[in-house]
Image 1 (cartoon, rainbow over the protein chains, first blue to last red):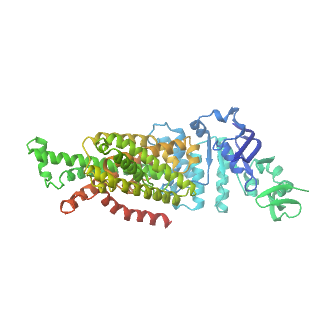
Image 2 (cartoon, each protein chain N blue to C red):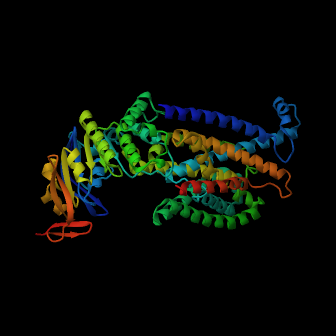
Image 3 (cartoon, rainbow over the protein chains, first blue to last red):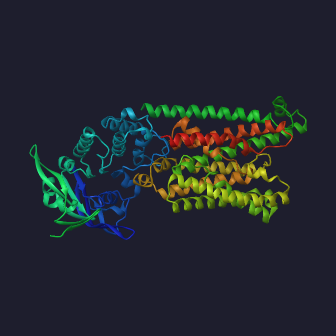
Length: 274
Length: 338
C-alpha cells in the first residue's frame, strides 16, 4: 500500500494551514512528521484521516482518490489517534476500545461478535491495558489514557495508522514501549504509519522517514539522518542546536534561542534572513 | 470477554427487574385513587361482575397509569439522548429549555384557540416545534457564549426561564378560557389525560425508541467527539440532528398530554448508567424503562398525597422535582469533585 499526497492545500478561515504539500507514505514504514507548533503536523494527519477537506490537491491510496471512498470503507482502512477525546460522560475503557470494531460490523448488528472480542482482548493485552478494561476513562492517568487511545486505533485493524503525539504524557519507559509497539505493528502487518512528534530524538530512533514541516510547507523529506540536521532544524525551530553522537547516532540538543542569524517571531518563524 | 459478558448479564437482569417493577407499579396504581376502590375489585372487573362505577374508576386509573408510564419512559429516553448529544451529564429536556419552550408554544396556541385542548394531535405537533425551537436557541446561545458544558447549561436555564415566564402569562389566559388549573400544565399532571391520547403517546414512544436504537452505535462513537465518530464512518451532524429531533419529539408529545414533568429526563440516564453502563444499546432502553417506573411511582405518590389533601390534586412535577432537586446536587458534586 502507498499513500500519495499531491499538492494538498488546507485553509482554516482563509488562513493557510498546509501549502502545496506533496509527500508519499509507504507500507511497513514509520514516517514521523516533525516541526514547530503551528507547522501543520496535526492538520496533515487530519487531512490524511479525511477529517479536514483540502481546498486544493488530492490524496491517493494505491492510486485511488480519497474522495471516492465511502465513510465506512475509509474507516476500515484508516485509524486516527486523536489525543483529545471527550470524557465528560463516564464510560469504561472496554466501551471505548470496542467502538474501534464498528467499521467492521454490519450496521444492524446489535452486539460484538466473538471475533470482535478476540481482537479487543489481543490488542489490549499487547498494549498492557487488559487490566484497565473495566475502569472508567476519566479515572485513567495520562499515560494509561495514551495507551488506551492507541489500543482503540489498533482494534480498528487499519491499514493506515495516524498518531498525533503518541508519546505525550508518557514516562520514559512507556514512551519507548509505545513507539516500539507502533514500529512492530507497522513492520509486522505492513501498515502505513504516520506519527506527529515533537521529540526529535524519538523521531530519529523510531522513524524510517522524516517529514519536516514549517508554516504548512514541507521543508525536507528523507531518512532521519538526512532531515535531522543542524542546518535544517535551527532555522525551522529558531533555536541553536548542537550535534552530539550517542551510541553511534547523531542527536540534536537545543542550547539556546537563535538571536542573530534568524528573524524569529514567537510562534511564527519567518525563516533565515542571512 | 469477561467485562462485556458481565455488561450483557447486567442489562438482562435490569430489564427483567424493571419490567417486573413496571408491572407491580401498574397494579398498585390501579388500586390507588381518590375514589377509594382498592385492588380487591380487580378479579371481579376481569370477570365482568363488578358495578359499573367501579369499572369506570379502574378504567380511568388504567388510562392515567399508561399515560404516566409512557410520559416518563419518553422523558427518560429524551434525557439520555440530550446528555449524549451535548456530552453533558447535566443535560435534560427541562434544563435545556425544550420543555418550557414547548409549553410556551402550546399555551400560545391555546390562547388563540382554547378548543385545541381537545385535539391533542395538533398540540403535539406544535409542542414538538416548540421543543425544537427551545433546543436550537439554547445551543445557539451556548455557542455564542463559548460552547463549553457550563455555558450550555446556563444557556438552557436562560431559555427555560424566558419561556417559563411566557408560559405563566399565557396559561393565566388559558385557565380563564378553559377552566383547567394552569398549574397542572406548568408542573405536569396525568389526571387530565384522555384515553384517546394514548395511541398518539404510545406511537411517539415507539418511534422515539426505534430511532434511538437505530442510532445507538453512532451515539457510542459520538460520545467521544465529532471527529472521533466521523473517523469511524458516522456522520456526526446527522447523529446530532436525529438525536435532538427525537428528544424534541418525545418532549413535545409529553408536554401536550401531561405538561412539564421535570427531572425525570435528568435522573433516568444516570440511574441507567449505574445499572448497565454507557453503551447506548443498553443505556437507551434502560432509561426508557427507568423513566417509566420512576414517573408512575411519582404519580402513585401524587395520588396518595392528594387523597387526604384538602387542596385537591397535586401536580406530578412537584414530586419528580422533589426527587430531581437532590439528584442534580448529587450529579453536580460527582462531576465537579473530579
